[in-house]
Length: 65
Image (cartoon, rainbow, N blue to C red; front, side, top):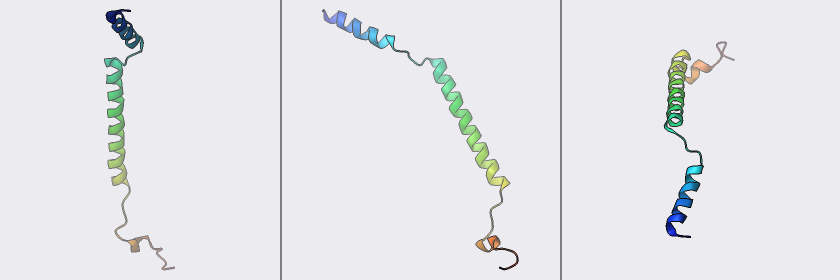
């Protein structure tokens, strides 16, 4: 088999595999960006919605027991 035929055969094997096209890559990027936005919103809103205790004494029961 000639070298050019071997190269052609190898390139056929590579082109036979499914490749992720630009549309798939863009969809994945949008999905990752959406996940980052949701995570950041949950981080910010979660931090503001729950007030942190000012000290350890604030966690003690009110009746002193």
